[in-house]
Image (tube, rainbow over the protein chains, first blue to last red):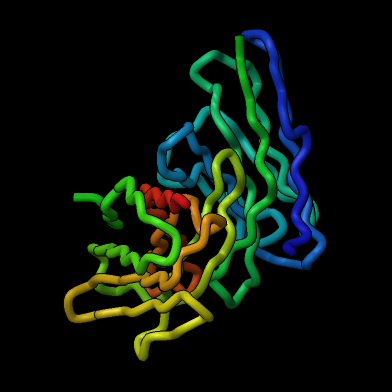
Length: 112
Length: 114
């Protein structure tokens, strides 16, 4: 089992609130990723990082932001949540010289 | 055209059946290929990597055809527990960097019934 954790697992919040989704891994992986997935749909990469102080936007435009101050931690922040942000957010990590990604359990976000 | 295309199914098969999934990819520079499994409302989990020579893991066999740019997954002797969505995943080796990103297909739904 991969040692990658996400909190909270479920979040229901009102429009306009600021939220931070947490993702941590204990495998020492340099690369970390955030994906967004709607029910029955494919995963879309929204952010990734190749190491500390490295962050890049993914293929799907997102209003969220990320930071990578520590290797093990890759939080995602939404400054002002909207109903269109309702989705599942999956965090993943991989070793620097490998492509295999290991996923956390996800955060299911509902914005009312 | 999508970078990774799969038949979404669903495939409904009885226990013990053999089922095959195919996947095509558009980026001829791709270097790494995987099958992931995703259970309903869960995270994707690596099922197996796919190598040019083909590889087998128990009841699962994966094949890669670089010339035709397609990947296959064969499941023999299906079990009820094989019911899941199977994701075809391809590395996007863009611009000569070794730090490619993964592109996920939309998945093929498999339901194995008694």
